[in-house]
Image (cartoon, rainbow, N blue to C red; front, top):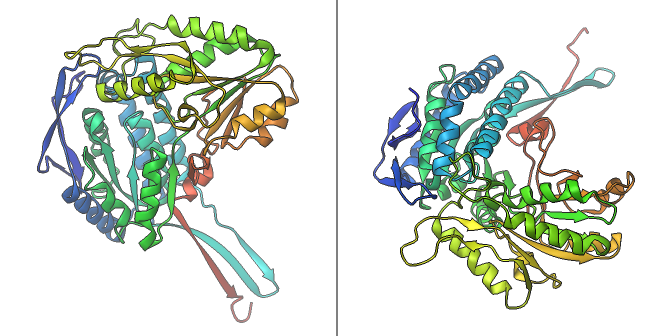
Length: 486
């Protein structure tokens, strides 16, 4: 079935569809109009998902059959590719992404499934005769049931980024996705359900707007590992709730990505990318380029060019091909961002004041124009707190050492970007930056084969690459002497 509008979405648990006990309405953030309804779960769905995943882990061949896992992941990639256009359209309507961004998300997702399908066949253990007659080997084994909690800002790719390595490792999954993208979630569940190679109970998926089911995924002794993408504040709560069972956590949390522009940078190349770094996904992105650090020699020119570039952005509905930036996820978040900028205006210089496109008591859309705020105080809330909207701060530095100090002066350490024509500077500065990913003269490039994750309070563990697979595995060490007579 293919449609650009899904009137209803359900949970998918233990190979069966369920409406659960509650229904909620999904809205288009560009218009405030209802798009459809979705099953809105909670504790009952979380409990059922965990039980089904545990049963499938213990009774099916999934944890032991690498070829089965590879086949299922390859098939899921094919099923997703078949419904690519439908997902793109629905993402633009329900999430607010412009069409190009929605297509970018889905086109990132399909190869990720295939990459982990290939890794499902790889044995990463090793063996050696450690001394005459004594042999030692390691085996990698699936951890057990994996809980996956993914956010609404890129619900398809961020869900797959966690559950694909879990499945490749041999884990079974209990997954909670958020209510803001209830219809997109339901379409992803349909794709999972259509994967015939996947035994019932291996993937269990529910949508929840509230917070009664997710905590059970964290605290349950039947869950072996948790993968969460979201805010640092919630990451701290997850760590607390996981402590009694000492389960491993993979957490990708908040960010305040510094975009460090040196005097010798090519501003013709810098300005379009920095603009994208602020406006992509309407700034609702953990790697948003939310801090522009400009060296004094080019600061005035860069400030002026960025203000003009942001002012020229065409803000409109996600499914309008002319839109360059869509709405935020909902009106409440747009108003929250507007308050943060208004508060900053009391002590900072507003270089470009964006703001709500439509105001007044009857406004229901979530359109918000991008803002640029010049600051000097590193302790300022707008520097230290993740805005999660199309807002960037502008800071001026003089020396390379000052740039490094400023870039590192937050609790976050997810990513950073360096702009320079000096071929030696990126390695020199990059080594000093407290960030899990550092780009040179570019931004937001991620590669399935290479790990990503955060330093400091931007998270723990890694996603993508072999270490992304390892987050869902246990390592067993076997030691044994040579057989008698050998």
